[in-house]
Length: 318
Image (cartoon, rainbow, N blue to C red; front, side, top):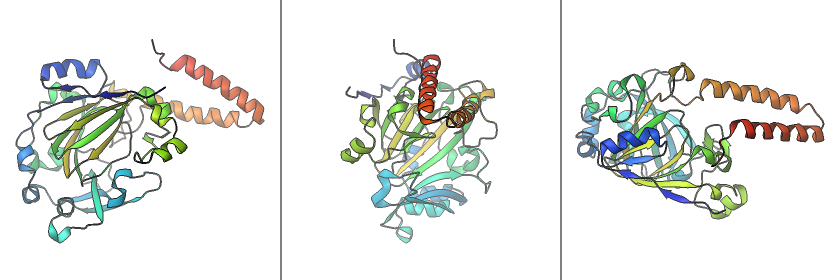
C-alpha cells in the first residue's frame, strides 16, 4: 500500500489552536505568533554575543557533507563542549571562527557539568530571554511546565528522527526549517532503536528500498516553519527537522499526563514513562526465558506472545 503524505494544518487564530492542539493529538503549526522582539533582534550575531552569557555549552560538531544524515549509531559527529560565544561565531560564520568544513548543533545548556539539571531558557539566559515572550497558557497550565531549551543550528543540520514522551512546542525564531512527522502508529515502519529511527539518510532511495523497505510505507506529515511559527509536537509523534539556514529556536516541554508517570530523575525529559519502562524490562526477561527453548519451540511461543500483545495492547483501526 502506498504511503500518504499529509500537510500539517496551519492555524492563525490562537483560540482555534487552543481548542484543537490537545484534543486532536496531531501536529499543528500556529503561524505568525507574537513572540516578542527576538525575531528581529536575534538576526544579528553581535547582538546575540552581547546578550548571551559566555557559559560552556555541549554541542554536536559534524562535517558539512554529513549534516543531513547525522547518525546516532555510527557517531559520524563529535560531542564537544565549547563556549556559547564560540558557538555563535561558528554558526553565524564570523570570520575568526569560520570553518568551511564543519557544522554545529547546540545540544545542551546548563551549569551542571554532568548535565543533570533541567534546561530553563529564562534562567539559563536571563538577558536574552527579555526579548522572548509567548502566551504559554495557549498550550499548557503553568504547573505542567517541564523545560525550555534554546536550539541553535548551522544551515543544513538534520537531527535524527525521534519521539519525545512529553507534549512540546517548537518556536522558530530565526531561519526556516522543513518538518517531517509520523504518528506513533507508524512505529513498525520506522526501524526503531530505542526512541530513535535507524533511518537517517532520506536521500538514497536504493538504500531505503534495500535496508529499510517498510519505511516508504509509513504515512507522514510535512510542514515548513518560518520565523514566528510554533509547531505543536504531540508526545510520541516521531519528528525530523532540517535547518534550511542558520537557525535559532526555543523548545518548550510540559507534562501532559499525570506527573507520577514520569521519571523524577530525568533532566532531559526523554526517558520512557515509568510503566512503559518497567514493561520493557519485564519483556527482556520474557525473551530470555523463551530463548532457553529449542528453535521450533521458541518460534511457536514467540508467535503466541506476539499474538497476545497485539490483541491486548494495540489500538485497532475502525
